[in-house]
Length: 340
Image 1 (cartoon, one colour):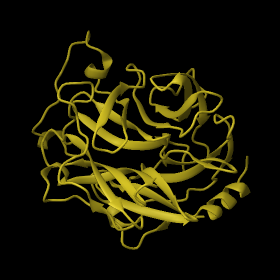
Image 2 (cartoon, one colour):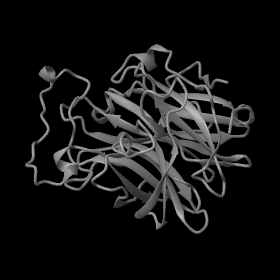
Image 3 (tube, one colour):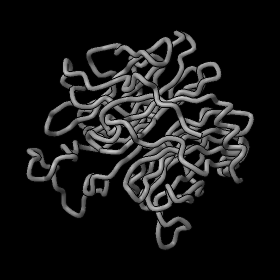
């Protein structure tokens, strides 16, 4: 079982006409807008500035493959001097009612051109004393929440993860279960001695309010040869099917390349994995995936269902956007053949 790579990939690439996205257009959150009949991508964008500030651009498509940018300006970016003043990146877009709940990774100041050798970087991150909060001092990730109905006006709600934990790949479920919100997360420190997982893994938390989640439980860790030597993390908003919540996830193997798998979580007890792909369903193979800012990285932040087709939108080498697809039934049948 493999996702089928679109022959005309990449579907979005850096745009030299706009300084803010002249180097990077990647890692898109995706959803289907029933009001407009369009697939929309909220993609991560950055230019050639030494600080490497990161923004969100918006692109739309009627068929899910041919996209046009809606503006020459970002639709959302770092705040002037807040908790996310450096970067906003890797959006996951969950629709709940008439609102879109956007979880995004952020940092308090720019990180610079991380892909260059230190000697070639012209920007240095600020240094702070040991008494400063860890989020500033160690330059870790927070995950924050933004709310919108039209992607023109946003409510920048604030952090939803613990500032003492480097927490990325945080994704909200599109509906409550048992009267509680649920979210997937990947705390980088929660592994090793004292934890059931030797490497960073997928956890789930819940709460009555999205601003206060707790009771975290381990959902999945690296298990098979292609995923057991490094971190794994959830990628896409859970899709409700009769068989369970379908989630695409990534794993970083011993060769440092990213590969994708799929989980089916229980509809009523989403901390329980009902099925899991025993082999990867996608890996970097094309030049735009293997050579870029982060070589060998394929990283989806969104998927949509168009008819019977599941379209998975992924970042390629931290620089481009690609799409890969399959029939939803084909993937569910494969998962049904995998061990519990």
